[in-house]
Length: 185
Image (cartoon, rainbow, N blue to C red; front, side):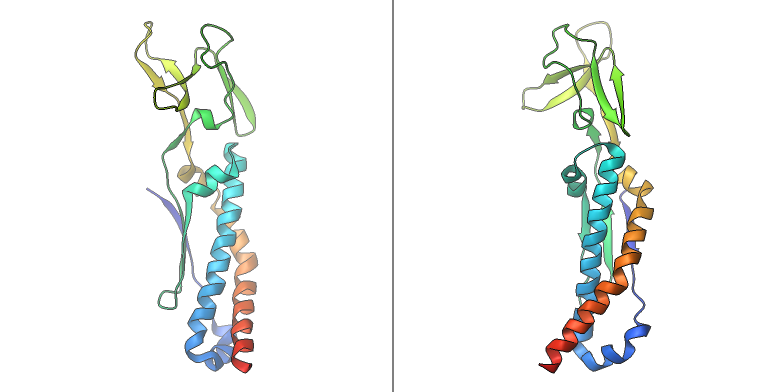
């Protein structure tokens, strides 16, 4: 199940400015919320990438922002996805190993770990992964996976809450001021 954090805004401090904006007020608030949501996504992608030891681009790909609109003044930031292949965790080892080396090593949470009987191989569709034999024979084999981004996202929500707390009021105030300046032109 995807993890989510929903952001809502209290506009009582800007009542006079919002009354002056009239119909344009929800547009300004939505833009401020969307800017804050985008900032929260970036902060979460960085935090998840550092925690998991993967590329920020891989983490960002799994985190989505449902934007606010004038009808719905809410931003929803969610993360979903399956467990990542162990290959994404800076796996090292010969491809194909053919008996060389002492297994496969990978980095998780800043620590390099080793799977002595693991091996890296490229399968028919071009995917490279870390595999382990299920028995004593050559087959069957199974691919090894690390945690999912959605799981780590749930552990890192304080990072996003902090970032949103820092930027939400500032972004909405900026967008309200911008709309007011457009109105007075």
